[in-house]
Length: 448
Image (cartoon, rainbow, N blue to C red; front, side):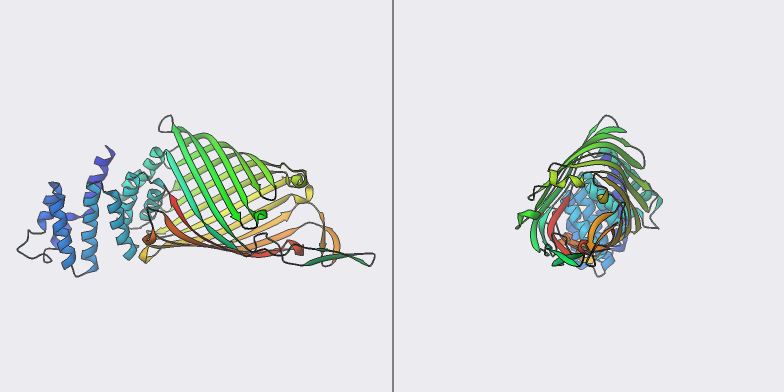
């Protein structure tokens, strides 16, 4: 039923009749007239229609003519349920003209038919941001977003790659730290900066068991791992979450409990029990909001690290503003309060970010996000600073930038190569807690 609803919409959007008139002078008069293309498609004589269109493409003189022909070929591929070919044709159009809204709109529908809901949602949100989008297309696009929330059962995001890091242990690089007691110096050697290359992988796997169109149980498995040559810095994490999910016309709401196990080769084993509320909602044609409120109980197994045991209260939110059919902004806000077993490790942190994402020619996608964080520790601790043993509260500022670049032209089986760049600099009133760090990530990713 859904396909019968979609295909006529796609056919209307193709504008085949108008296209035929526009191409009347392209084909030799000895060939069937372009007006027959519409008739051939309606009669499902796709082979003959494709022959005419391919000949017209070779004879076309302008970019607009080539776009109209490719749109119609993509429609035929959709009718033949050759979705991979349809995606390839729409991508071809967008690679040369990222602002071609009709290609973005129809690409979202094809991803929906393939049950690749993350890609369908993202492309439709971009298409709906176009100001002059016809009312019927806007209605169909809103319907698609609703259907994605209704239909998705399985959802996954995976990535693998390598990650060179200039400061894997996050230290200042200061060699010696001293303080004076009654005029006598007491010194210790600090850990030096370590650089390394990590092999990393991560994945999020969701399964939703539906009771009806509104209520379901959503379950999530998350895995994150990175392995360094110096195994002290290798890290593994595995988490499980489950809880009721409610689906509304414009959003979805998930209340869940979770457990996460974290460990590294330096025998830091941590267990985290959490309860959280996830909110995802579309706010008009240009805005989309994601928010998460969470309470966590974090405990370490080894006595040495139990000073880091804490109860954490956090709020995270990202507001997406889709500028047009090829670019968007992402405003991030987060606040967290850590109440640690050792008072001097308790802190309040707030973080802000503003990202810009763009779909560029030749299939390139870029995302740039500067960010800033401030941490205020709530109780005094004993530290060495400026050569003196002092008792004071730590205060830290962290500035950074995240850049991600990918290209679907290089995708293999929809696995997209990606390069990420991360830079962070932390300043602290306690000298040894400041650091500067650069990290690259080279890998492939896929959402389905």
